[in-house]
Image (tube, rainbow, N blue to C red; front, top):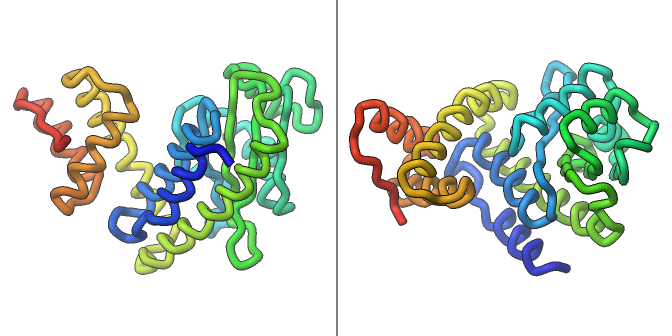
Length: 238
């Protein structure tokens, strides 16, 4: 197994459910997957209490759009993955004809290959981890095995996080996630602009400050955005 994936699995296993909101657990799973599994972007499809599948978090707006094309048509690799509890791989979206609506959206957003792995908890499919690449044939058989292992660990992490936050429904937790994600992205942009760092480094700085101050990530992000609007100096823990 590639060393980055080993590091990713360790990070997922050691993630302390409840130290941060469910939304941050979900985003961390998607972000780590993108880096460790050599994808351009990733998203997490979850089945909501109303029976509808939605993208809980993603690493880009393009991933959201490609996912939405599948929800709108009620078919696609991410839906097939969690419905059948089987991994779905698309080697080339320009020639794969199984899900035409998905393929059209994927090609329009420069997604040439994808890999969707089911998230299974106690035998039930709760969603799917979706990886997207601009390169055709990006994901090999070995990658598929690695993704399946990562998805199994990620499913446990998500189940633990959800159990910790059981005082709120999953839908309510994810609604909060959608609200807080915009603030976190704004804060990342402020840090990138003021410190000249990458998006990943900006997120890591936010996360470390959250842990150092024992505050929720979205609270730290909101404060950074507010200070930037006031023209205050922006400082983060390093």
